[in-house]
Image (tube, rainbow, N blue to C red; front, side, top):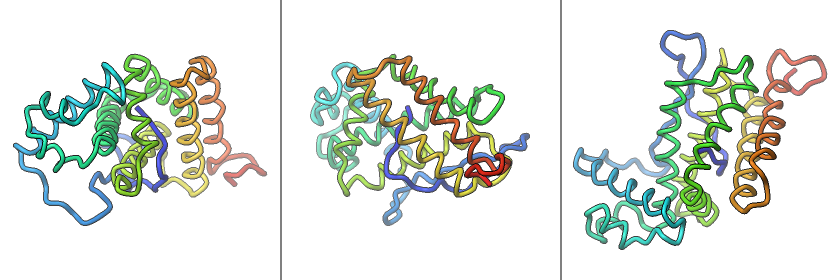
Length: 235
């Protein structure tokens, strides 16, 4: 899924192998002091924890994710779980990060086929939205965790934001580094996506309305492109 968070600029852009487009690469390490890399066993344990979190959230939403149940489902001690994730909010934000990483990989394998950048980004966001339709309880749990996140969760929230930015930039298929105007448009698109997701989850917006809103905000991409007509923000 995609979700706007505390806006951060993406990592460096590298060219896709075999294409002329730039690819957003995201540094996934926390913004604080560097932590030693996980061993293979620790990484497997972390994967089990995230899987258990997603499974519980899919069944009952935010309230269904109880740390003791996550520990039991992932076959780890409760104390061990808290060493990986200090709170349920930390865990669910990390679950969102994991979901976004999977989506980013899928989108690179099956990139959007729109004729221009605005169409490709709109298609990407709607594909993400359709995935959320299949797991509404999980989507609600992850969005609520982002809403409840305090300063202690800032590194994880920042990573979610950088991943979201990278997914949108990949869909745009830029041939050069994004301009400040284009990055500003990406941030507005992220904010609109987040708002549309919240209103849909609360039953205040239909899927058709979400689609219209996403297609409308994606027009900012054309307005901020370096080749925009005179008088537009991209010039």
